[in-house]
Length: 380
Ligand SMILES: Cc1ncc(COP(=O)(O)O)c(C=O)c1O
Image 1: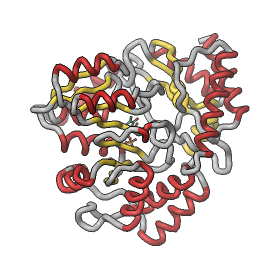
Image 2: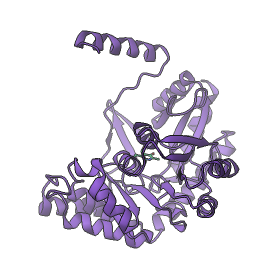
Image 3: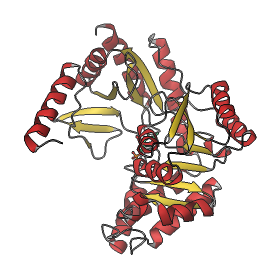
Image 4: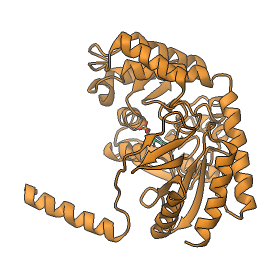
């Protein structure tokens, strides 16, 4: 029990501790520079953006913007209610259908964010009598959901198939949870092998495909359930759970995050629908792959040791938080905005720059970042 004064004291003491450890987090106003290529502005300064997750450059695509504008005219700004009351529109149904056609899953359920999606899925499916086996690096949203439900959580070493198998053999028929592309490391799970393992052990496989959907071969496996997010490659907002009709019907009727929350805005759905169409022919993905290869080459030429990653997420581990912040600040002074990732998001001593690439980056921007990295890491 704590009264208001005691609560404020607790807050102040925790703030002080985090500040002393260099782990205090704050927001900064950031906006795209209209008409520019991957430029954002913050405090009156312009940066090339290597921090956002708009991997295909769709967040500012004119056709996506137009589709959302038209949907705003038709549906208004918000869905105005829970999907089970009156918040479920044709825009939602169409997007669900599109996602099913693309992924081969039978049914889909839309939520306002990936965090809510993981929460809805895992909290509705599992209870304290279940064991879930999960990769060591799964996202906070999944860990929190499993912890909230007091599910017995067993973690296998990151991407370690043999360890996963060992745990599954000990607790057969437990669900196995992984990401497709890992958000902080940028590497990929051995999905085909994990799917085969789950099949052998009669275990449901659950894949958080937030960073792999449309960008990797993650759709080649058909898990029991898949979470896709719209805030990354699709440049929008929201998420979907994909699975069998039976699973989705069950979630519609039982997931508290779905039932007791205003449905995703119809205009957001329309924007995502258009973005999906633009991503369908693979052209943007090709541009992104070229950019990834080009950037990795440029970094290698400068002696910059990026983590092994074929994805849009290119981490550079620097160690302690202070050094991460120092290098990020130096890069900012040169006009590059990068993600500075510190514990507890990553393990202690593994602080890193999270450099995110987009199909929309131009080669000279990638080259300039590689050169700046070499200079900034050298004198940090
Ligand atoms: C792996 C993973 N899953 C889920 C989420 C949550 O998605 P959203 O940003 O839509 O809440 C994120 C976002 O950071 C993520 O990286």
